[in-house]
Image 1 (cartoon, rainbow, N blue to C red):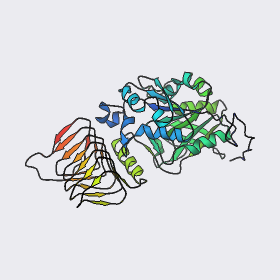
Image 2: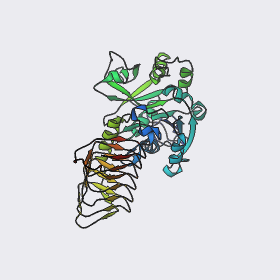
Image 3: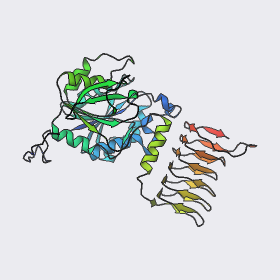
Image 4: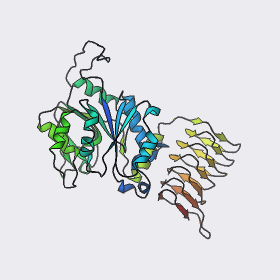
Length: 380
């Protein structure tokens, strides 16, 4: 990477050493049908599914904010967009300003980006897919973009099966020279992961794009269009973990990864005769009853009742207002308001809000795995 000349600090450029204006906006994509996550997405956008008791989209908001980006556009689809608005509001709760932009029917990532043209004006902007999670946030991506003075930047991650993703090809200086969506013969193992930085010229390129075989405007074509126009698109290779939470197993793995980094914080009540092992978070108003064993890393929200004589195993996230009465629960997510009293061992499960899972008469306990949408009532 070339040496960077440090510029003199001015009022317009308050951070030493950056060539590009400090102001960068953000764009979070919160549309799409979420078909791979049904039935959970029958009752709300996939970006609201919690990872370690926090909606996926909030990780995106916080990453943008922590990188110094305070003006954020949120692209809304047609799957209950009011739920996104209800959660995020005007953004002030998280120290940002949010503008909602309606895309409607999903016509591709590039189409969603084009919908933000009026909001972005002449400012560079970070695009963040609202169902992505990345270790360590995006501070480094934003910093190097500012310093390098490029026309775009793309976050990349090495993967074992690059033909499942958009793939980037780099030159010796780390600039992207090729961008292809799901190539049969990938030229690298670097997947384009859903976090990009663009400047104003991208809108003109998208306007001239043609839909792909999926009838969508592909962002990989937008990146290639910038390269073909002679614009500089730099790369940023993620060295930690990255997850696209598009399927139940991906959400459970992301939950596992986030919980690996938690620190213990017990605000609820742990009754005499209950045992806590490892790193566990227990929210206010929650009671862990006698005879329970809770092993971390685990997070339990507010106003829950666990037990008596229940086992909560590692990598479990229990949302607010849940009841787990006896039985065993491990490596699972209970989204909120769930009641489990089936006496069975539930593992690797994703259970929607306000479900009731109780015991059916005449069946012996055995391990089960569930993916259940909101407001379900199941006897097992």
